[in-house]
Length: 130
Image 1 (tube, helix red, strand yellow):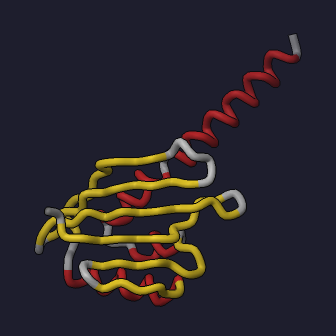
Image 2 (tube, helix red, strand yellow):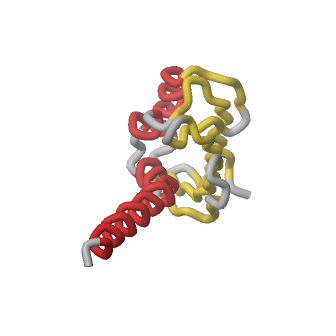
C-alpha cells in the first residue's frame, strides 16, 4: 500500500511542473497588460534581439528593459491576450500576443529558449497589428 502514496505525490509534482512551464506565456501576457517591464525583463536572456515597431537591434537585458519601459510609456496597454503558443519542444517556447493599447493594437511575438531549467526570452518582436 505504501507505493501508492509515493506515486500520487510524484504524479502531482510532475503534472504541476508541466503546468508551470506551460503558463509562462500566460504570465508574460499578464505582465504586458500591466506594462510591467521589470517582470518581463526578468525572463530575458543576457542579450536579446529586440524589434519594436521598425527598430531592431541586439541589446543587453538592462537596455532592453529600458526600451520596453519607454514603449509602455508611449503605448499604455489596455488588454493583452494569447493568440498562439507553441510548447511542444522541450527546449523552445513561442507565444504570440495581441496587445491593445490606448494608441493602437500590436502583435507581440516572444521566442524563448531553455537555459538550465528555465525558459529565457531570446527574441521579442512588437509590431503594429495588420
